[in-house]
Length: 288
Image 1 (cartoon, rainbow, N blue to C red):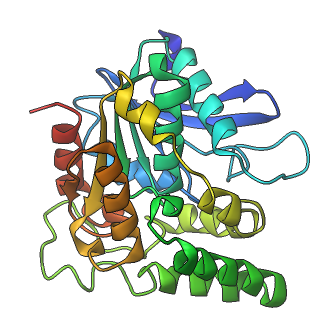
Image 2 (tube, rainbow, N blue to C red):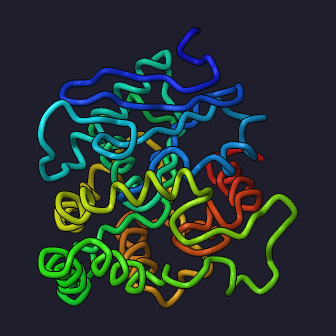
């Protein structure tokens, strides 16, 4: 199908244009980035999966090259999920394997409930569904503080605080104790190359103003996920242990009655350990 043609494409959806990038061949693997990130953060990971999957990474609406028709509004996971389902339909309509990181994992969880026909299996990597904690008040207060810092002091101060709270402020890779494999590259916490970093940095204000708090308050329909027909696995980075995001992921797996799947690295392990991450992802999606 022409929609599987490798390269960059655009899909018009209500209210936006979605930029997506296709690589490789095989069953479709939709890769959903989180927060301010875009398709570029998955370039290395896709390179290690393109021999087994048609990888499709995209910029969520409002980020980077996925432009909005109107003014920015508070982000809704359901709207992102509708976009993702339209993208799967554009790619031929067969159910896709879905991988999402962070807020992208929340989008995947919503897809599994509201668009189950579009999802063959889901790997949700460290979804920040903090409302599932027994007491979310402390983590919620941290996010509120980041938002207030943005309103008071601007983007740079707020993003610095956000990265520090999420353990992403040091150079990723300093703490990986030599576990890096050939084909893995040292990179900063939020990016893979200067071009991607520049684009993602340009999304910080949209994320702080319209993404952080609405996404923090998103609560997945755990009962529907548990009873649904889509296999759902939750991935947690081995270097995320002790971080709030790890506890949040465990809260979700407890409610789903599943065990978490171990992944190399931290919240952005797909960027720091792409080869090992690709193997863990392939295994979690049912490949051996």
